[in-house]
Length: 304
Image (cartoon, rainbow, N blue to C red):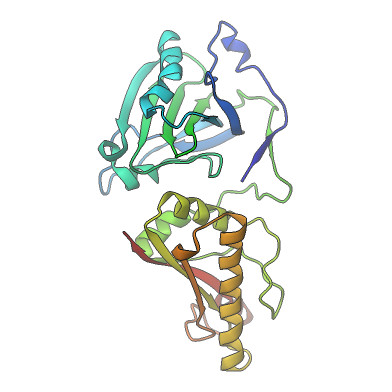
């Protein structure tokens, strides 16, 4: 998902002395900001059962890409770390890939999605720095690389309204509301409903979207090459069993095609099938229940 920067602004009027969080040699790939939001900024390595508290304020997230995949994650982070240190920021916590907690730590991070940001679960670095008397008060850096480029994600948390009226504008039709943590639910329960999908009534045609759930799933599959999932279509009990089975499977196949064709998900990671009306999650005796039963779920099969 691409973000289109509506206005280019200086960092903050109060920082005219020279704190400039731009990555030398990097290209701005995406930026998103909000005057009031919350974000998870881990202060320790991941441990089971330890939640990450959220930091509130004006939020800006920026991704830079560097056309040099040979750079280490430390080399990518170093220029901004030095800039922050020179401005009086103190290091709160830093770690690298497995020392952070690997897969589990990565999915505590609220990052802009692929293809703008890419995280190799075996090769990433995290750094959190803070300055209690400055804006932004907190800056978190995440660096990683692919075979083609290096990536740096910068999260800045400032006082509420610090970014004024300067906004980033999503592509037309891009949803602006947050969605539940789909991947966390998938990992915990083993399956989750893709609740934002819309199909033509009685047909398998998936409308244009975009769909935040599919973007999130595609990002995760791209970063987790050993994961395999199944898409399972479901219907209500209205109509013949064979018809519903066929319709549910066709809807799952439509979702599979959208993931592979639009977001480039590896087809080997995603299978599709249908269960018709055989696995309801609500009563088919009421309209509300029938609506809930008409769904596509993603089921986690394995992670190698």
